[in-house]
Length: 263
Image 1 (cartoon, rainbow, N blue to C red):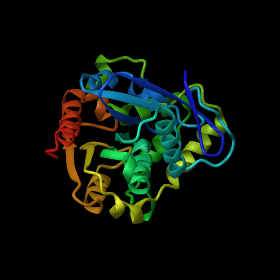
Image 2 (cartoon, helix red, strand yellow):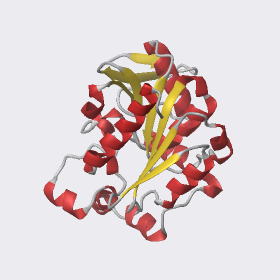
Image 3 (tube, helix red, strand yellow):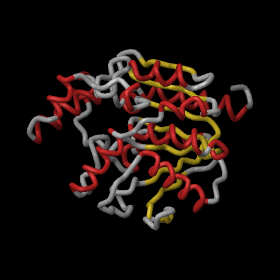
């Protein structure tokens, strides 16, 4: 597996598949590129997909030092540089959407179109999950896993899709990396930088997302100039997988409109 070297010398594993306009797919907190396994092929009709393993996950280095969403964005730039990709679409979901906000705000020349999925601006302007959700995720191991499954997917999906699930965290992560990822996500606050985003932006969210409350979508869309907001009825946090028949065409149409110059 190829690796890029970050500005601070960390080896970042990445994956590149398909042909066409490149699109960077950014996974959620404490997850590797496998987050995208079930939907990645949907993009290959017209796009080259680029993913990477966050530091602390997968085949990337796992230093025990502070991580940040802005630092993860710099790691993405290192990957693009290693691939010789000057500009790419960026689609970030959950914590990946937080990383994508920094990419678009701090590296505008490298971004074509931007999609922010099931994410939040963070900080005092972000809407936190409710106390009941926090309690459910703090239960002992199997109970917390079941609670997370029910926040990611609807009961109907879980009844007919027994897994395995690639969205519940990278099982290879050491405990220190999990803690570092959690801190990076919690410390994210891009509110002041959001008006600097000049890329055409689509904000997508499930209407029934309690893990990252749906109201965050409107906060983001109102803060980013010209952003478009789309809610997927009935969807929870993993809308991109369970509702791929809706979410996939929605995202692809947005990217294709940009590539045709009609966005």
